[in-house]
Amino acid sequence: MVNAPFIYLNEVCKVYDNNMVIKQADLMIPRSGFAFLLGSTGAGKSTILKMISGEIKPTKGRVYIKGQDTSRWSKSQKAAWRRKIGYVFQEDRLLSYQTVFENVALPLEIQEMPRKKIKEKVRSILKVIGLGNRINAFPDQLSGGERQRVSLARALVSNPELIIADEPTAQLDPQTAAEIFNLLVSLNRTGRITILMATHEWDLVERTNLPAYFIKDGSLLYWEGTS
Image (tube, rainbow, N blue to C red; front, side, top):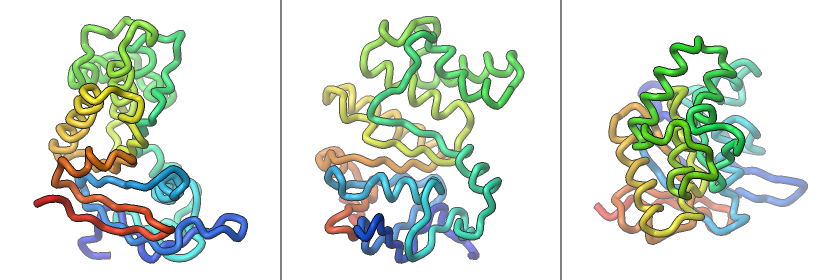
């Protein structure tokens, strides 16, 4: 596909055990774009995200990543794509017995990156997200917003092409949620990261001019933003 969008879902349908969760989904996100994915609990947000990550296949339709039909990918190609995705969840999923530094370093250790390089990358990303002074703290010594920032740092440390943020502000107070969202926006504006944020917080979406996709009755509807 010439000049293909970064992520493209074309007439996607997903059925589980004769239950049609997604009837019709068309989605297009350009490289370095930011889009919301909205829907009530059980509407199918996780199904859409899993199809984009390559975890599951659509029953019908096609998922394209950088112009490539993911149904044609080998296992190694799917694994390579997943390594280019950073995840931020509603629950921070930090390891309580590890420091901030150790939690953020974990993906790099799995990649067997040299220790000196790990130190450089972790310290750099913690500085970017405003936690350079909390590097030796443990998760139970952090506020909810700080913990979510650590989760974001862990998602960013491997230089992902895509961040999937699945309800990242759901358990935070309004002020802290706004801080996390603004941090995501500022990271996206660097032009290096595409962000897809799943949320049910319509008021957050309405305050922006960012595009959004709504799942309603199994269909994906597009909202272009306020500008």
